[in-house]
View 1 (cartoon, rainbow, N blue to C red):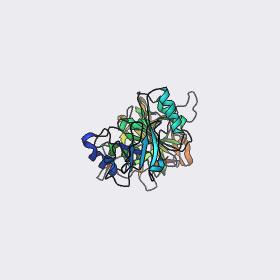
View 2 (view 1 turned 180 degrees about the vertical axis):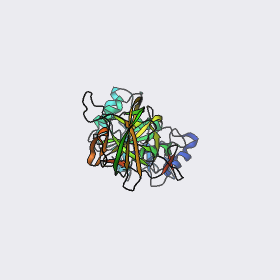
View 3 (view 1 turned 90 degrees about the vertical axis):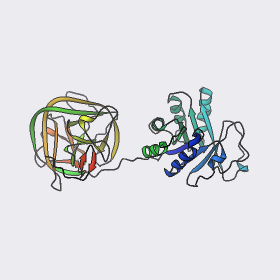
View 4 (view 1 turned 90 degrees about the horizontal axis):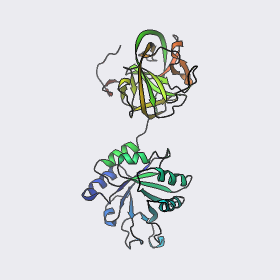
Length: 365
């Protein structure tokens, strides 16, 4: 996926202009936007200096601007300003302005869009109109949370976002969220040593807001240093339809990964949290939890050993339809496991305290 562009708008920054501009530069923002050329002075060449021209004509002096965005219909004589790129800005307020914006984004230039109404439908229409074009679309967002929503509209979102009312700290937060990646995990093959019926208890099904792939699930374990890959319910089952969003994960005290570094207990998860979806090849992505179903069921303990001798334990619902993944994304029914069978797992390698990895003495058994 192409990295999203982060732009910062100085026009409404007030007395914090210098502070937020320095922060944006430090966070390697791609562009800083201003209405006054003087506000662009002193910015380093590592950031694109963008001048937004109001009215129906360009100013005679563009200052240090690298890119100038003119309003709809504003005449542009690019020959008068060698070395300066030109694009357009559009305020989408009604059907007429929406049509103008759709026409603009079909070109190969830069288009800055703002939307008056609190709905994403106009943005969806513009992004659809721009499909397979070579231009760059930046959408104005009032805050970091709005910017993240923009970037997921029609799945891929615009090419970047402009923070229109930045406060100190916003650039740092946006950069961290937009540029965060979900690393590939090293998976190992653990060997089953036995399974045991351990009576009744509460188990958790984690229902996500995403379609999980047939070779994808979440890592779960009784001990934080050794987790097994429980597969999603994308595979057909007798007597019931598939639940491609669900992982029948394990007993409620089990650990899972909220991201590549931090663990959560299954009992702690609730709607709106994230868990790490993991593929059989180790690829990962964060998915949103829509619901956690905790119910009393018979439980089964799976005992295994990692290649380095590390003991592994997982307690799941005692039922044939609860499944884990083996090498090559083989789907294994847990009640049919036997000593010598192989399961994919992950060894985080460090103890945990409130989900954070730490180095201290800790025995789990």
